[in-house]
Amino acid sequence: MKYLSQILSLGFFLFLAIQVQAQHDHGSHGHKAEPAKTEAMPAGGVTDIFMVYGNCGMCERRIEGALSKVKGVHSADWDVDTKVLTVKYDDTAISLDDIKKKVAEAGHDTDKFRAKDEVYGNLPGCCQYERPKS
Image 1 (cartoon, helix red, strand yellow):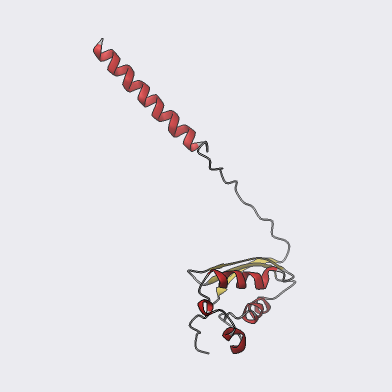
Image 2 (cartoon, rainbow, N blue to C red):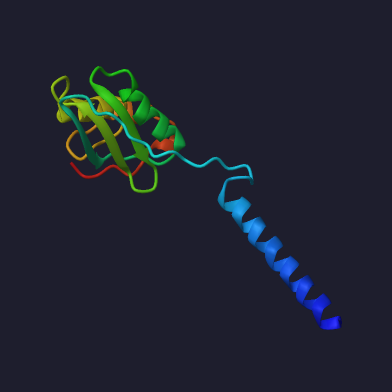
């Protein structure tokens, strides 16, 4: 009888552990399962990445904001750690060089265009990155 009680207790705890794991896997812990994202890219839609110099979250907002209302640009995402801007745009509406110019106009050097010294000088101190040599 003693062994039967131990076997039943072990079985109960095993059952409980399986149930807890099953509920965890099904999102009952407050996290919603992420649906697969499929973005429809319009005709002429391309994605490019390029280097943009900056330092912080303020830079990120400025860089992405410089492109937020530009016709033909669908999205812009700058990574503060890698200094890489990923931009999705309609290449029949705007060229990659024009996108890089818009970023430079906001005060951030790109791999091809340098921000005007006056615009760069007006950036907050935390945003003044070490500029590449021209």
